Amino acid sequence: MVLLLCMIFLTAMMLLGLSSSADTILQSQLATNLQKAERVKQSAQTTLETGEKWLMDLGASAPGPCQAPCKQAVIHPAGTLPGDLQYKPLNWWLANGQAVGQNPPPSRNKSNPSVWLIESSYTGAVADRPGERRSWYRILARASDPTDKVVSVVESIVLKTWTEQQKPSSTIPTDSALCAAGSGDCGRMAWRRLR
Image 1 (cartoon, helix red, strand yellow):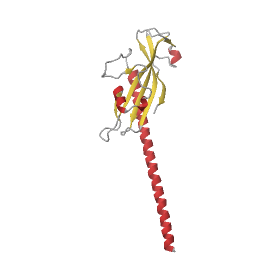
Image 2 (cartoon, rainbow, N blue to C red):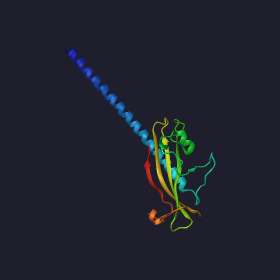
Image 3 (cartoon, rainbow, N blue to C red):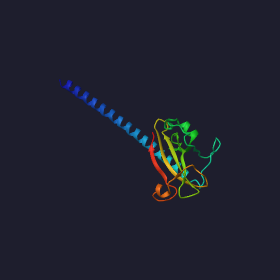
Image 4 (cartoon, rainbow, N blue to C red):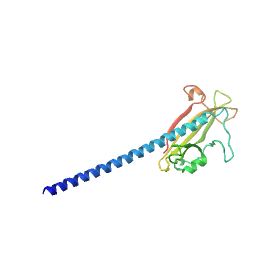
């Protein structure tokens, strides 16, 4: 009888140990997945900031179109990017955007580059400043893990002032109505995560 009770007790302890071991493994996998997703989100945000900085650092005149293949980053005309670009594969992004680099160094394990691209949204003259025009840009950034299964896509809307003589069809409010500081370049006006 004692032997039978010991066997039942040992079986129960073994099942309890296996159950807690499986729970620990599951918790570890969940933590790893969350950590991977957070790294990808941070990489996409950093890539977005790189695209914003590139645009804001441009000189006084807006860049013109270039013939494909372009050697520099391209600003896509309004309405030319697909509506579902957050689901486009990495090779589409590489063909249409600007790659930033590899996120862990390539010596450890191969990583996908992060990519940003810019779409022009709207341009208008500033009401009380002749010779200046305001342009809104949609900047998008994509980052992923080495397997390309964890993907993050973020976008921002950026406002930039160009000083050049052009005649847009409409005028927009003055600086004081658009920017609290009253400066020409407001930078990021909005942000959201698409994927």
